[in-house]
Image (cartoon, rainbow, N blue to C red; front, side, top):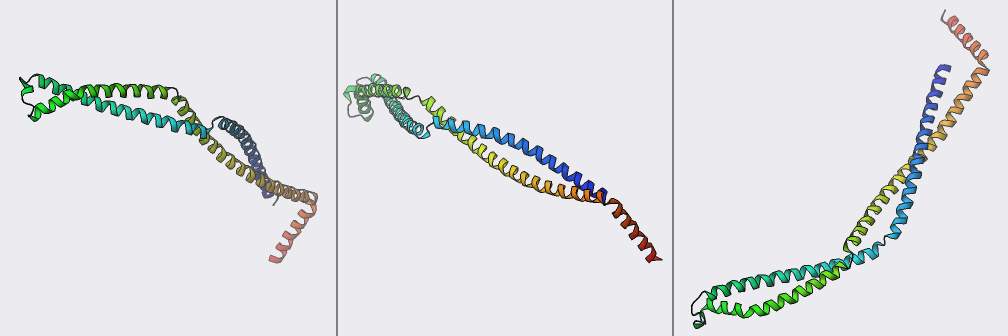
Length: 219
């Protein structure tokens, strides 16, 4: 049937045109993704994650030292505060020195005796804390952390681009295979239509003769 054959050819041409358009679009997307992937690769070379991780480890260790000094300082300051309170209580007891055997008075006197030592400890810890904080300030902690975060974001984006490139490449490959098949099928249909047109009179006469024979046979 000529009309059905032509309709079939038209449908396949529409499919081929759609595949060609989509393939061109995906090729542009792949080209852009490749460009971005190359930029990401160059950027990652400037972000030495091994070196950055080493710096971050040193920074973390220093922050741990600071936290330890802060904890020690808080503990000493609590002890000083407690001793000072006991000192005030001792001052309020008349003849407190006359009853050294009393546990309360004994503890209060011990607290008074410890105050100079605690004060020295506080001064030393404060000095060590200040030194540790100054050292931490020279480590560019924010810059290192920001660079690591940037590296991680670029790695994640690179992974997405790689997956996109793989998907686009596979689809383009499939489209190209489908286009090749459709082109062959369209050519075959066109050849059939051409052959029909070239032998149209003979074919139509044959069809007419066949119909006449069928009518005769039915009588």
